[in-house]
Length: 168
Image 1 (cartoon, rainbow, N blue to C red):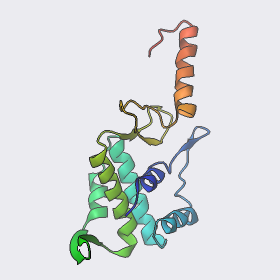
Image 2 (tube, rainbow, N blue to C red; image 1 turned 90 degrees about the vertical axis):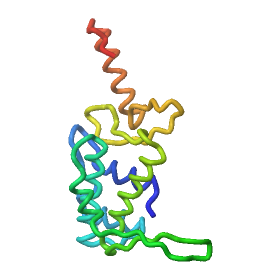
Image 3 (spheres, helix red, strand yellow; image 1 turned 120 degrees about the vertical axis):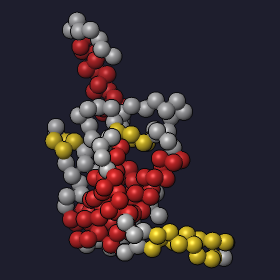
Image 4 (cartoon, rainbow, N blue to C red; image 1 turned 120 degrees about the horizontal axis):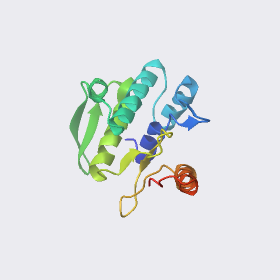
């Protein structure tokens, strides 16, 4: 099963660099490498499913409609109990080319269940990254204080120094 780190890598695979959105998963080899690092085998079908799942999860976290794409990724998936040495193990029954995409959606669902409201987009409107807030107060606002946080604070300071209303 995919971990939080893999989920964050997927969600953050469309960063903004020099003012333009980049898609790190656009390159088939890059995505195949990511898939293989996480137990996949690569290939056209797996890449299509992973991109669909990633796009749906990004949409869901930004408040856009994601249900049709999530339904498509999860269609026909079954979780089946299997007796094992330590009790009952649950196994997914799914076509192999869709396994990683389904695991990505399940990792997202797990994070949202265990840490409700902690996974969210960066508050910098020019950023496309997501953060998983682990602060006690659940008050993190930016993907990185060094980049987005400092930039936005500096802009507000400059606006106040120029005689603006301060706004924030």
